[in-house]
Amino acid sequence: MKFVDEATIEVIAGKGGNGAASFRREKFIPKGGPDGGDGGRGGSIHAVADRNINTLVDFRFSRLHRAKNGENGRGSDQYGAGAPDILLRVPVGTVIFDAETGEQLFDLDRHNQKATLAAGGAGGLGNLHFKSSTNRAPRQFTYGKEGEQRKLRLELKVLADVGLLGMPNAGKSTLISKVSNARPKVADYPFTTLHPNLGVVRTSPSHSFVIADIPGLIEGASEGAGLGHLFLRHLSRTRVLLHLVDVSSPDPDADIVAQAEAEVRAISEELRRYDADLYNKPRWLILNKLDMVAEPESVQRALVQALGWTDPVFAISALTGVGTQHLMLKLQEWLDAQRRLDNEVQDKADGSYVAEDPRFDENRGTPDTAPPA
Image (cartoon, rainbow, N blue to C red):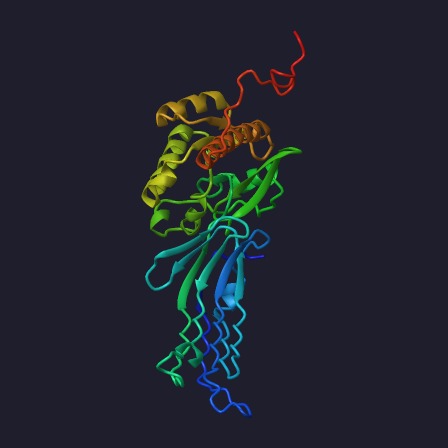
């Protein structure tokens, strides 16, 4: 299925029903008094995040969503029925903006998270509410209120733990096809990847993470050049970036180190221009196509020195699989540590944090139950 990550829709909530002005009329009861009921509330429109949906493609074809109006009140103290709400299911990671002002309204980043896009109008009051000791036969009633109406822009940001970035044909699609269940198209021409590919990397029966292959970046991407700029937003949710760089060259006389350094600096500059937070994310340097390099160790040392790189560096061959398993295990280890830190922060915020006993050994049990030495 084609990946669709933007859509513009219009939502119109239902109008509330009008209140009724009615009087009770029964035999032998000439002055029954007011009995006009209230109008029903108009239908609201909500969005809910659903992890079983992957794209916004349905909203490309269904742009207008209108809820029904509430029923009018009636005599005999009968209230009008409220209109049913409309529930729009969107992928987890959908950000909702006001299409006219550009203001961000909601960020649905959790399964079953719900947001009200347009609230239905309240129903009007019937005349029974206006009865008083000085107004025994009120003829007042109120009209139902109009429902909210909005034009919205839906934008999907891919949820992944690890994001791959690099120049076109750096080997990102090959890597994700080797280490995960994703099967992206792989070819020898620029922009093979036309939309983000998500894959699940399973390092053990109980440990896994999600990796995203983003279309290749070129210079000027932050200003709209190439395809990568359309998907830079997806990298903002990742925990760590793998910066793949091709350290091979068909020209035996080419300066591989200078070429790789220029590519790394160009993409780093595009990240910096696009988003400072994205630029400052942890970024591991991955030297790819190791099988086509005569002296990979010397190339790695020279490139790290030229860039002044301080984050982790790995040399791999995505095509043959050399070094990829070690890289995935290191990623899993790093991600697990980050999740533990996040959980501790959340527990401290909730007041339920308990410091782990430093003497605890999961293989021996707690200090109270540990067997004697």
